[in-house]
Length: 229
Image (tube, rainbow, N blue to C red; front, side, top):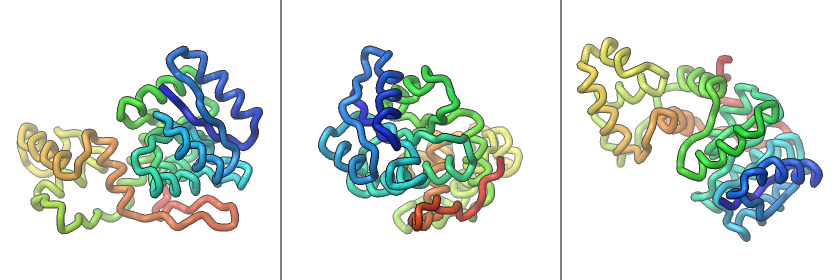
């Protein structure tokens, strides 16, 4: 697996490299310390996964801007956002900007390697606390406006909203007075139509319907709806 890493200082990049390459099958092929360097390194090296800190030389939240630009230029790139603190607003904004995973520096280094493997395999990587932040945010955003090309029935939309809010299939069945088998069938149809594969990606689909403002004056884009801790 090949990886590009980006952090505020070269020394931090080296520490990350040492941590990641303790696993012999992961190889760091590029390092960056600014927004422009991140974009250049990813476009030139085409890594399997990138680890990008929210804090770069450009500013405390320049990594979010880099992530947003990468998403526009390289839609297939997979990025794990590196956070200094596990704050709800940062978690939500990282996923809104296109991150496929989250890792906090206070976590165990072996978890970062697990996260790299998970994201490389096409999964979403977040711990339970970070998922709670996402669920809290989803519960507070308005129901998304499904596009005209999304052919979901009214009932499928109802199931999708409840699942995205964190309800289990059993709870959805009780809420809508449907059998759990029927809920499962509706959910499979929702996943197929939205081209997603799991409940976490459904959370992210709902979040993506509320577009965040661009970062200005070195400040984090404020979440349109603040996630509850």
